[in-house]
Amino acid sequence: HPTNNNKPTMSRIAGERSGAHKEEREQLIPGAKRGPVATRRCGAAAVVLVVAVVTVAAHYVVRSGELGPWTESGFARLRKTGIAGPDSALWGDSSSAPYPTGAWWLNSVLSDEASSPATPYQILTGANGVVLSYSSRRRVVSRDAQVDQFGVDWVAVPWSDGVLDERLAEVQRECCNDSYVAAGDLLLMSSPETPRRILEHSHLGVVFRYEPGLRVAVVKASPLATFEIEDGASAAFAPGGAAGGRIREVTRRGPNAFVIELTDESRWLLVVDAEADFGEGGLVVSGPAAARLGAAPSEADLQVLLASCPTTFARGGDVLFGEDGRYSLRWRTAVDEACPRLALLAQRHHLQTLSSPAPSANASGFVGSKGRMHWVVAPDHTWELH
Image (cartoon, rainbow, N blue to C red; front, side, top):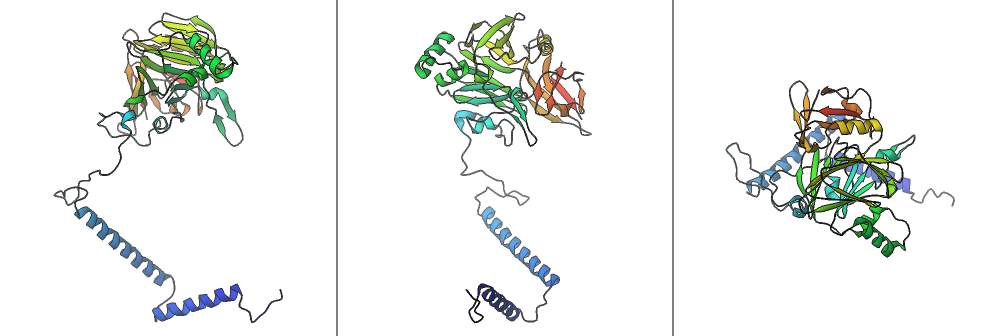
């Protein structure tokens, strides 16, 4: 349409309103100086007003006695009221310590579908069982990102259903018309939701307990995942779809050690201080026992693991700070008195700050988020760093 100079346009209306507001400001504050000084004074006055209001409000709330009695110094003792506590079914009723916030393993508490980065593994402690993933062997690197894809390498569940292979074959017939399904996936499908709770937690690890007697320790830097089976209980372990789904071969490598080759040709080390009943679909261990399971990237790594006390293992640990910027990582361990050394894996950023014990000169075959990891064998289960 042609422009009509007599017809009010949006720009003219906005300009008229702006002029009107300007006149109103000049009338409300006659003789006011406009400029940065006046602006700063107005801003300071606003801040003082806000602080005064907040102070009065806070004083009223605290003085009302809702947060506890006053101390001699004039501060109130805070009392927690009206806040729901953590799920007692998971945390336990008897815990007196503060519940952690920001802990690296909290994913396993907040969701049944989230894994915890217990380097070099990702471990999912879900309602139906435990899933172990050595995700870095499926690493995808692009120009924009590095992604370690979570996959079901192994599944562990409490077990009371007889012969594992027979039960897995029955589940496969019922669900999948005898078509091929990985043994670990069948085990998860057939496992009911299992009551679980946290037994202990620390800076370096957390221990879950599944009824009726399976414990799993999720610990930083541990080359093997640790499962403790209580007396009278049993646990089943089966390879998942990300690792081929079946056992191809088992080779004994010592009184307590077995090398397990899966159908995807990956090799894994099992260290167990009790008898293990092996089948094509997995294995069953009855308690009391400690079963440790993890990847064996190379023969050299197998030699280090077998020579460095694999029956001594960590359940967690603490970070201790000293003077001059020094600190230590001290692992809580279950110790085999005949062989007390603790074998762990250090990330690359540890190498320049680790004072003792000395890491291995050559990198291991294990891969963490920052590249190949190095072996650290600690006789006293402590790392000193600076």
